[in-house]
Image (cartoon, rainbow, N blue to C red; front, side):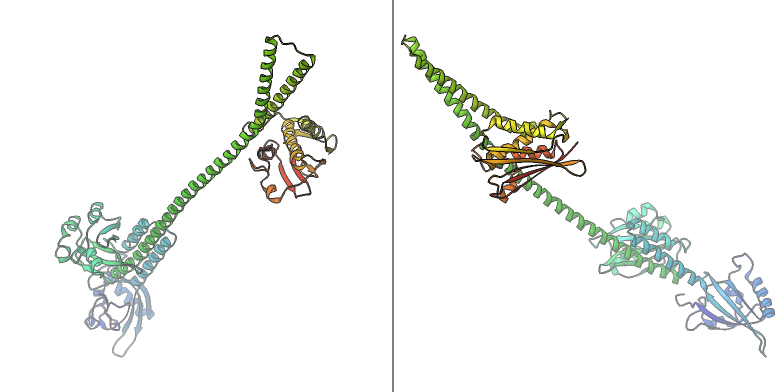
Length: 560
């Protein structure tokens, strides 16, 4: 029946029974009949006993003949039956021809069942391709494929088996209507030349048609698996992947002994092609995902290595910074504490000598007693100054951890804060040669943390005196002006020695100083910068050039 025509012309005698006078169908058969065998056959024999509406075909043909004889032509849909009993829907066009030897009907038969099947198959193909294109998972795609192929055929059961990556064993792909136990039994089966329809189709890479499972030699080892479920026929086609060879099989099962029709073979080939596209796309997606996962794992491993290296580098830098800090602390504290210890030792030795003279009853002159008092007073003063210096150094170091957590917010006059900070610097340092020019306008009020700002100003002024104007006459100019967005700019400028660009870039780093061991701890600007950016909610910028002095610019909010 594979060579049945889609269009045929019958010449029928316009008489009861409509006997066929001849048939034209090219080289194909008409409903499975050789055209010559149709001669003299009544047209009713090509029809089922009844049409879909339940009326007898012979009765309707008689009515149709009367209609054509009256109208001269007629067109309608009509169901014929193939030689093996399969119904086929046709478009039927009849034309009356009056001849000298009697009236005849030219009957044009157009098999629209095949056209409808082709349309359904094309719709199924479009739906499956859309599912693949939109990235649907493989399992529902294959399940939908089997459902679409089963729909046009009564009693059809479809399966998709996947060939394992080892190229030898099969895995279930889809078969929603198949018994679950049957599909499970196929899992892991080995393909071969006599491995049923599917295993053989994959092994030989060919379409395998088995019309009777009970007797076919390909099913010798598997018929006891299929027959208990009522399956008697199985046709299978290999599934190919682009540039991958055989990757599976698509099978069609029936619970009756039979061979496939033309439509069923077309559906089998279409299904195997669509399954190949879906499986190949899914495997490529899996490969991309595995590659992406591998790449992600490599990135994560490399990131961990880099983070470990970074931590090691940070720790080494911390240790180096801590070493510099401890070295500076020990050196800075050694000087005042050593001086204090030396003065205390000198006082103790002098006191011991003075006590011996008193114990021995030696007379003391007035001048000796005056000298002793002077020496004692100077020694005590020296001890007090050096201990105070050590305490101030310790206080500076503590600022790194203590911060200004106990600072209180208040409204205060900025000019007054500048003058108070300068007074504190003057009380600690010998800055008689440095002149302060305060150009901050009176009445400029801030709502902030006055003690924190005093600490910052004191540090900046001290830096200007000790590092910008070391032992020389100079001038420190402090100015302020309100800006936009409720902020103000506070500047401190000295006309001292200035700083090179490399030192400016690192000036606010912790523990950086150009006078380590000579009174500099490397924490002053770092603490000031941290307090301005933190508690005060502003910013600190440093500008300087050698020989042109240094300018520190603070951008501060009038209120936090």
